[in-house]
Image 1 (cartoon, rainbow, N blue to C red):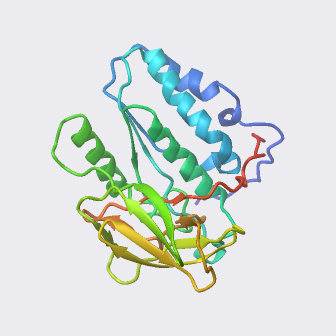
Image 2 (image 1 turned 30 degrees about the horizontal axis):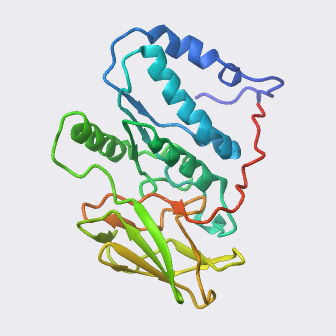
Image 3 (image 1 turned 135 degrees about the vertical axis):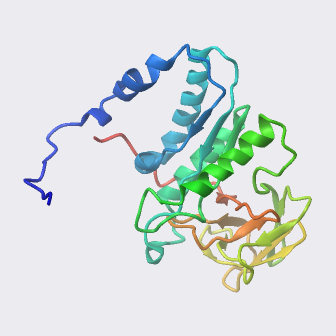
Length: 263
């Protein structure tokens, strides 16, 4: 029987917005307790300033390890799930894609791992309900890397890209090959020529490679995969079924480069 009494107009930042409050109140009191590692799932609120998140996220990981004084303990995180209407996707750029890539860059730190969740999101819910699969993918990382279970814990990663006439060849770290989720056509790729304008690409798997082409791009030089707000239709996986995460091979300026914190 509850009902809204009156809307709350935010005239100032809430407690969750205040710098240092969440850390000082909820994390700092735990420093000193022995831990085995960290599982992290966050980033949605940082999308408008995704370019800054790359350094900020790595700084958080590095600082927590310093504060706990237990060395480079495992830090496994979830790449943001698919969100927002598919109809709003555009190949002109996406701050959501930039945030996912900022998360991926944290893999440069030692003893980190990323669970990709672009295939189990919800276009209308920023907190998708399928947490069981998210937990399973995080568990795969921990069981393999911490508890030495002999299993594949993540999808293949892109190793190199090379133009070959009207085709762009993407080579993956995939000794067992690549697959398409659910079968059918491979989707989610776009290519661009020297002018940097991206067009949907026809894609096919050739062993551990993906071959891209487009009638609109005579000589492709750059590729993007899942580089949209909602990459749920991107369906490249490893043979074990784990999804390949979004990526780009171009160096165009980031849409979020000027993003700043505005509570």
